[in-house]
Length: 524
Image (cartoon, rainbow, N blue to C red; front, side, top):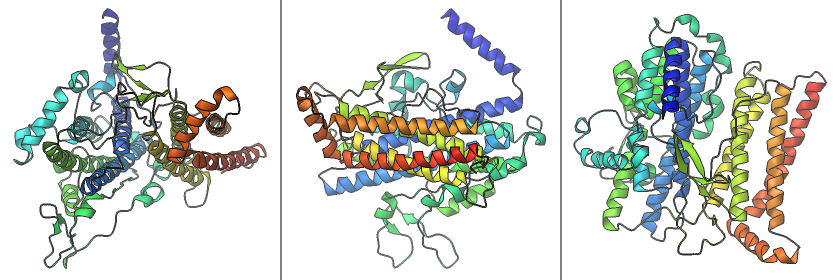
């Protein structure tokens, strides 16, 4: 305890010694990490939803929930990239990790945990995205459920005690960056504009669907109370549109303080804290409301309400089919979280464990590609084909790989004896385990070699898993038969062989780039 108190005292002194710019960069890094954590937690909850619900109405409802959560996760990706742009404007490095430091505890919404979809899980999502105000200040029809949300979070032990609204962080960021006395104009480098992430590069795959306009040019909004549009004479229900929500990615580039404040305010309004936009930029707030886009709070609160109603009919019904909490491929089945051990759930069955390792490798590759594309943007022109565009193309490919692998993992047993009634939550899940570091090597050639290492490691893991399904030694036949049956059950072997072929092409591409660099071509 004494050592911990000393550590806190040292960190408090360091914080007092920070310049306002350093403090702002720290806050933005915490914001990036919080967005990363939320994005991963939302993805895990969406992946855990069962696709085989026998009741057609409930199955459609589950698919609607999945679509809404995935839409929020995609928007969180846009938030993550937007924060990187503001960091770039300040001349600070990217922040792609999920840092867990004492300083960050005040700002993170709650202790990070990968939990399957449940009412308590959704309660956490609602809490993270809601405004930091008294429940009595919300609409009257929202108050009873919001009180249940607060009760659920408070009952969750240490995780609930550490819970915060994300709005506290963005309120402080906007307050600091808006003040020229603390952050002078000289701290903003407008020349970084061209090397920042943009919607043109990352958002095109998430373009919202066309929507109907009235005679005045305003959007016709759905009336979710009677599931019909508000335009007279329309009989087509909006239920499917409402359920299968579209993501509205916003990834603005920034060249000034005004741009940065506007980007952060828009980010906050879309997800966590619309009151910031009302207070700081009422004009932006009115435009946002005219678009009729639901906030993250709106989406999660609607899910929480609908799920609560279903549980009142049948308290034993679960839309998530036994997916475990906090899966891991590590040998140490605990992880330090805010000074306390957090138990992890081991994945031990051969098929699920190897696929989970491949998932982690592709997750690392995605983060590496993102960081490398950002770095290349410092020198490569964006108006012509270059390696940055190719890296971004491969990053999108890794997103699809992660989605495919996650879909397999949630249908695979995590233990060899998962048929035993004593095994709780028998199915595996995507572990999203970070590498030891998200930093890139200094030399560009070493970055390409790092990509090669991860690709070769992934190919080796694929080969090991396929070999385990086709073992020739008699003493391994029984185990091999089990592994093959599991892989066949989720269509994994065909996918793995295709992935290995694509990785071989990627390795040849990287070798050509390294050869070009050795010959003085630069590889851009």
